[in-house]
Amino acid sequence: MKALVYGGPGNKSWTDVPDPRIQQPGDAIVKVDTTTICGTDLHILKGDVPAVEKGRILGHEGVGTIVETGSSVTGLKVNDRVIISCIKSCGHCANCRTGLYSHCLGDEGQAGTGWIFGHLIDGTQAEYVRVPYADNSLHLLPSGVRDEQAVMLSDILPTGFEIGVQYGRVKPGDSVAVVGAGPVGLAAITTAGLYGAATVVAIDLDANRLQEARDFGATDTVLSGSSDWKDQVLALTGGQGVDVAIEAVGVPATFAMCTEIVRPGGSVANVGVHGKPVELHLETLWIQNINISMGLVNTNTTPMLLKLVAQGKIRAEKFATHHFGFDQFLEAYDTFSRAAETKALKVILTS
Ligand code: NAD
Ligand code: ZN
View 1 (tube, protein in one colour):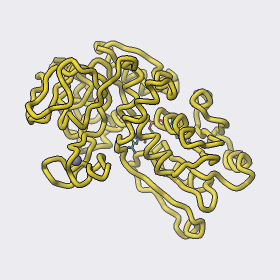
View 2 (cartoon, protein in one colour):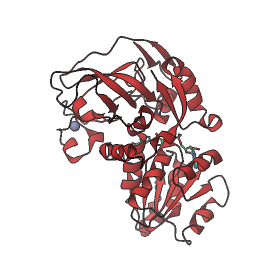
View 3 (tube, protein in one colour):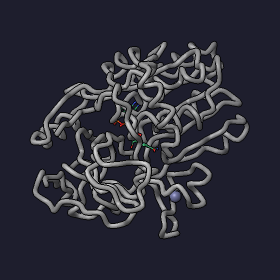
View 4 (tube, helix red, strand yellow):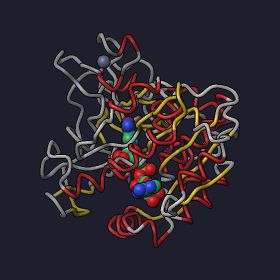
C-alpha cells in the first residue's frame, strides 16, 4: 500500500510500504477512506516529538471501512464504516475504567498513553491502518454522517470540548475566552455553547481566523497583536475578566495571556501542546483563587459529539476547507503548513 512516511526531521514521503496485518486478536484492519493532517504532525516533522521513529506512518485521524477483524473483536464487522479515534483504549485497564483513555495502559500494563497512532505505531495517513483494541477505539458511523464531518471527531472536536470546555468547567451564562482560533480553538468555541456560555471571545493574531471564529459561534473577537488586546477583553466582561480562559496555541505567551484575563475564581484550561518550559507565576496567581487544568484528550465524549453532528447541532463540515486525493498528500501538507496564506483549517484527504 501507499502511506505518508516520516523520514526524520524535515523529511516525509508518500511511498510504498507493506500492508498492515492483524497482530493481536483485538485488532482490526481499516481501509482509510478519509484522513486529515493535524498541527501535531507538523510538530513531529520539525523533530519536536522524538518518540516518533524514522519510518513511522504519520496520522491519528481518520474515517474508514473495516476490511478484517481479529478473532476477539465482537462489536464490529467487515464493511462497517467507522471513525478512528486518535486515542486507543483497551476498555479494561485501571485508567480506561475511569474514562481516562488518554492513559490507557493496554495489556502491557506499563505507564501508557492512549495516543499511539502516528506516534508509537503506524498511523492513519495510509491506505490501510491496523487499529488495536478495535472494539473500544473505533466508533460505528451512522449512514447520515459524511466522512468530512466524522473525521473531525477523531481529535479536534473532543479535544476542544473535553480539555477546553469541560476541564474549564464552563457553566450557563459564563464568559469564555479562547486564545488561538485554529481548528482546536474553533472546536472549543463551537462546543462552549453546549454548556451555555453567554460570551465567547476568540483571540488570535490572524484576522482571517477571527472571521472564521464568528461563524463557529464567537460573540466577540480580539486581535492579540493589538497593544490594547487585554483591555478589549476586560471591557467585554465589565472589567472583571473572563470566567474561563482556554489556551489553544501551545506557547508560553498564550498561557500567560490566559492567566492575565481570567477573573478571580475563574478557570484557565490549557489545551495546547507545549514544547518549551512555561513560567507559572504563583507569586501573583495564588491570591486569585483560580483553577488551572491541562491534559491529553480522552475522546470519551466522541459518542455524544457524534450524535450532535448527526443531528446537525454541531456543523463539523465547516472545518473542512481544502480537499485532496491521496496522490496529492505532499500538496495537502504544503497547503496545511501555510495556513495563514491558504486560509486552511482542516485539509481533507480522500482515497
Ligand atoms: P493551529 O496551529 O492550527 O492554530 C493555532 C492558532 O493560534 C492559529 O490560528 C494562530 O494564528 C494562533 N496563534 C499563534 N500565536 C498566537 C498568539 N501569540 N496569540 C494568539 N493566537 C496565536 O493549532 P491547532 O491544530 O488548532 O491546535 C492547537 C493546539 O492544541 C496545538 O498546540 C496542538 O498541538 C494542541 N492539541 C492538543 C491536544 C490535547 O489533547 N491536549 C490535542 C490536539 C491538539
Ligand atoms: Zn486501557
